[in-house]
Every structure is written in structure tokens, then in C-alpha cells.
Amino acid sequence: MIPFLDLKKINESFQPSLDAAMLRTINSGWYLLGNEVKGFEKEYAEYIGSRHCVSCANGLDALTLIFRSYIELGRLRPGDEVIVPANTYIATLLAISECGLIPVVVDADPVTLQIDSEKMKAALTPKTKAVAIVHLYGRNAYSEEIARFCKEGNLLLVEDNAQAAGCRYGMHLTGSLGDAAGHSFYPGKNLGALGDGGAVTTDDSELARMVRILAFYGSEKKYVFDYCGRNSRLDEIQAAALRVKLPRLDKDNDRRREIARYYQQNIRNPRVTLPYPEEGKAGSDNVFHLFPILVADRDSFQAALTEKGIQTLIHYPIPPHLQKCYRETLPVRFPLPVTEDIALRELSIPISPVMTDEEVEEVVRVINLTH
Image (cartoon, rainbow, N blue to C red; front, side):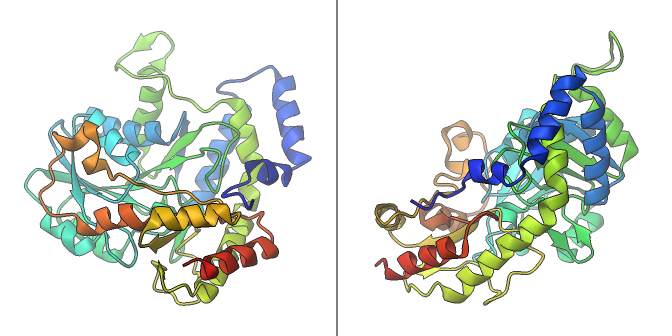
């Protein structure tokens, strides 16, 4: 079986450095809010190209802390609307609604599978105060058009960069393009920890300070609590692991692009739609956290691949607006046919920096022979 993602093999590829980092951290006797976290925050901020990086427990917390901080700073108020893509993992919306803000979902572009900027404009109301873009599957969702839309409407631009560590837009990395960005270091991400982890990056010193306060119980001074915060922190073990992996991130992303290029050039099954327009190309605007294909009768196609030794996953079979938790409360003002079609047809095929050429070729061979 060719696994969808072999985490054991990925972590083995960082040995012996990973073991040494773990031993160093264990022997330090300091396991929370120590030098490993400080070092990672500094290194990741420099890598992303932002003035500040504030680490936290996970990607959902990162996004939630951004929106909550904007509320505490008076830049957002409960009841304000946030435009968000309908085609995303539910965490993006949970972060918005948890803060008393209203997610307004917008359909996806059928080619890029990212938020449709034209439909985004139609969602604007006097209550709109922010836009949350999602670099879904590892592909950049930012554009000058979106930036101009936010500037003209005096809207905050928040990036969900959970799936796109190392992705570029021109000379800049995603995570440094908007007012703030949330990052996830879930083990399966391009930059993955050994457990959960997250971070906020921003150039806004006031926002970074507030995120740090809220992530530490609402306290800036020991035993003094000016805000009702939460406990959300990256531990030293995870930070040490991430410090080992960060220097190789660009190289690993390049390998993902090589695999994606091979897929784009060689998958020729008429049942399969490749969602990206770069025929045979894999540019720096995509780090291919996932390689999604669109297939009619997806479930039978997936079963056939499994039978032939190719493990695949579906991202995501039920979009947020059709989930029970949002069905009665989420404002759906426009039809969402592209998002709902993606949910029915999307299938993610194996892609990772530790796949061999032979495995990649076998994935293509099996896909092309499956009818």
C-alpha cells in the first residue's frame, strides 16, 4: 500500500537531529515557555517575513486569538460580518463564530478551488468588517484584487495559512500578506510538529501583544488578569521539533512541487479533473499540502484505488454550511454550487517529500487504469 502520508518516514528523515533536539529539551528541565519556544518564534517570524510570531496550542486557537484580539482592541465588534470561503475546513468558521462574529460564506472558483473574488464583492454589506482568506490545499489565495477590495472597504484581511507554510506570492510568503495570519503545525502539515501547535504572525505590535496576553489566561503580569483569556501555548518539545524541520521546509516543498508537476503532466484519466490551470507547471504559489483531484462517482473511484494499493483521503465531504452546527445559524445568502460540487467530487491523492519516484509513478499508473 502506498500511504497517503507516511509520518513515520518523514520524521525518520530528520534523524539524528530530531532525537538530539528532543534529548536537549528533556535535559534542559524546562518544558513550557522556554528557549525553544522563543527561538522558534524568532526563526519563524524571520522565515515568514513578519515582525512578530506568537506561538499557541493549535491552528484553531491561532485564528480565534486573532479575531478575539481585534475585538479587545476595538477594531471588531460582536455581530460584525467576516467574509470567508465556503470551501474550507470548518476551523476557519469556528474561529469567527466563537468570537461572536458572523461568517458570511462565499463560493469557490471552479478552477483554483479558492474563494471567488467576484462573488466576494457581492457579499459586502455595511456590517462587513473583515475578510478571511484560506490558502487551501497549500495554494495561495491572496491577490491584488482582494487586497484592493479590503483597502477600499477598510476591511481587515486575515489569512488562514494552516495548509500553506512556505507558499509564496511574488517576493512574499503567505502569512505575511494580510493584517494577521494563523498557522497550524499539526503533524500532517508541510511544517508539522510531533503533536499539535500553532502560531500567529503579524506586523502589528499591538495585535501581537494582545494575542500573547489572551493566550496566557488574559495576563501580561503574573497573577494580574485584565482579560478573560485562555491557556494556549506551544510546548518546548514541539518548538524544538519545529526548529529542526523549518530549515528544510523549502526543500521539502520543492519536492512536493516536483511530484505535483509529474501528476499534472501524466494523469490522463478522462474521469479525473485536475483543478489547477498550470498545465505541467507547479509554481511557487502552491506548496501542495494536498493534491486534490475531482472525480465523478468519487466513492467508487476511491474504493478502486484502495483495492489497488493507493491510499487516498477526502477533503472535505460536508462543507461547513451544511454541517448540523451551522445549518440554522449561518447566513447563506447566495447559492454555493461550486463548493457543494467540490465536496462531492474531491479526492486527495498521496503527496509528500518522502515519496519515491517509483511510488509517484505507481499512483499515476493506477489512476490512469482505473475506470
